[in-house]
Length: 275
Image (cartoon, rainbow, N blue to C red; front, side, top):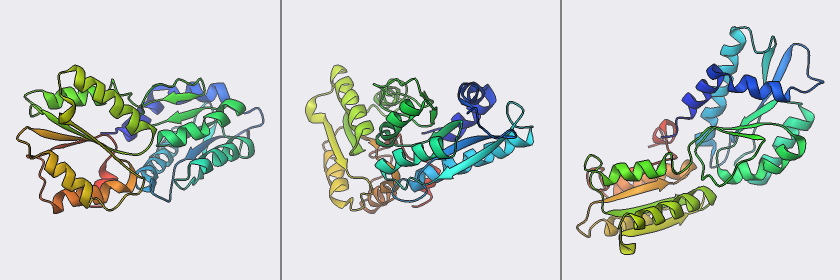
């Protein structure tokens, strides 16, 4: 659902990176290289999702350099590991900009990590390319938001599930990780569903912490909620490695997509490979 790799690829091909780097190449940069910061978690609960973004960036930088680089210079990747630690994201961002003198940074995944680094990018006037969907309600001059807001992703997904092609869903489980993106998105979705005539008793909302692994109670509640005789679906904003035990528990309790489908906004090949 994320489309992160294709988004990054399009950014290189469309020239968005060129525009960003033109605005931010440090005056003291080395004559033959432009440093690019990569700020993705390579350890901790978000590593399952973010490591692939780091790999994609390294591949694309290598490909761009093989074409002659950018602005007449080679790109040089500077990789750091904020380790799924939100305050550490800010520290590593400052290190990339102040110490490594990067021209721009590609990084973050969760909105809480993005919000942690915003003051750093504003203070030091550097650029963050943010690669995934987010909750909206924010527009910072130092950030390129390349992902979808809820009106571009979550609401169309719900519209599809409500349609005949999508299964004519009548009951809704809004299942998310407990931080700003899932909470804001689900607040928007809950209001949207009610405006569409969905009764409050047909909407179930639940949040679990980052890295959550004991899904038995939560999945049992989903199964019970879906047994009321109305077509039920889960809209999932569960993030990181918590996805692996979540889907395993759905299987353990015999929940099939034909019975209770799951529409997930923050899961991809990396998480599914862990099943």
